Length: 322
Image (cartoon, rainbow, N blue to C red; front, side, top):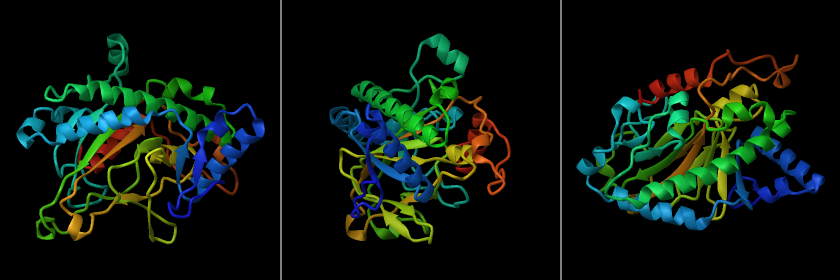
């Protein structure tokens, strides 16, 4: 496994998994399984998510967050529980937290043929009129990250002894979300509510999360001993971590690692940060029951049966979006 000690997480090359050399492919799968069992995070290079697409979305995102709060609130849809459009500052909080995170964000979902959208029950996306380029850029990044996500899930299932075709029907056109998160500048430390951070410690709800490099540092993951490890990667590396849904499916074999975004030092509190995670979800009807391949006498079933939609509803209530 290729590892860069300065970043602290394993760095893998996706071209190894795409290779016709079966030994390279098998090594990628083995390294990915080991990383997800030990730390829950990897960095991925050799993907086809073009830097130009990401740069264009960053530019559009900065244009949106520069709008006034009144203008941005036009795109808040409380009836959609944060699943599309704008979510204001401080509304989302980590499970069990009593104070909101120091962020605001914009959510983009699937954009499919109208009949298919209706059958799947997906709401329409909400697009800011003041930044018309946001729509095209966000959809291009959504599709690129979704494609890479399918490849990563295929490699994960290979490692669990399953063929991707066994779940493709539940994952294709899944209820995935691209989040454009803005960690806004803070005037001074005294203005920060007690205990508030940019993103409090949490695990992700979904199957896997794909994160293109953020505009500033701050992401940290929690090691098994409780200490925190900063995650810093270059702009060509996409961080991919296990979510709670995948941990359930794998009976805890693959780790949904707790992570957070810490506040910058006081001298940098007034510096904003944007990040763009892609939360890869299946369709709501997918059965999240533990896979038979992950149960044996040493590893009894740890999780009750639940559908992806039921699990999502439960977690949205816990984090203040419903």
